[in-house]
Image (cartoon, rainbow, N blue to C red; front, side, top):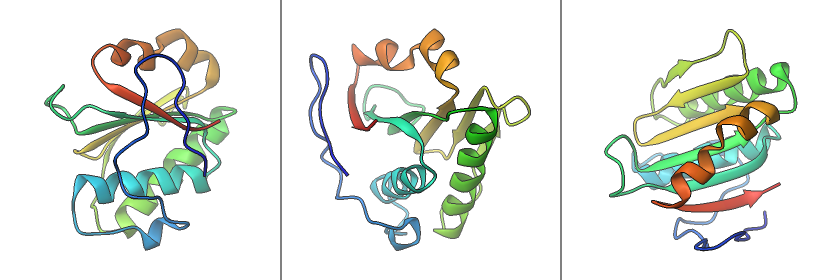
Length: 143
């Protein structure tokens, strides 16, 4: 996995290195362990243009926001299903989910990490990374 920063104000994350398998991620209940599980799961599901945004101290809703894309409605739904299973299997419980019926934009709220899975056109329209870039540190994971 390659970490690279794109754009002004971006920097490498301070989180621990990602593991090859979501099941191998730490299940200590920390936000960092949950983030590692989420990122590993999204990588395994072939999510595209994966971006993690650290919003600690910038928003009370979560510690991290993750934005990624799927190639189609079916791929977005499969990514979300895979992520929900991996989160539960890693011991982080059941996440709240919105948008699974249309699979244009699926929101998965785990409490400490909020994940947005978009179709590319919908992601471009809402442009969440730009909206949060002024107040947080987005880091492009791959894609």
